Image (cartoon, rainbow, N blue to C red):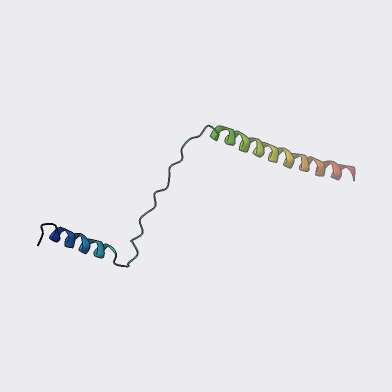
Length: 72
């Protein structure tokens, strides 16, 4: 028997044991942490502008209702 025979048998046994057919146990997925980008500030400014526009639109609608109510 050659000196490599026991090693090759051991390697074959490990390969077969690794292929047991069972699905691997699910591992907890690590959530990637938020990485700052150059566009983050622009996105914040854009959202702030949308919020201001929404407030202005609501106030304009309210003012229109008050004007219509006063005209009647």
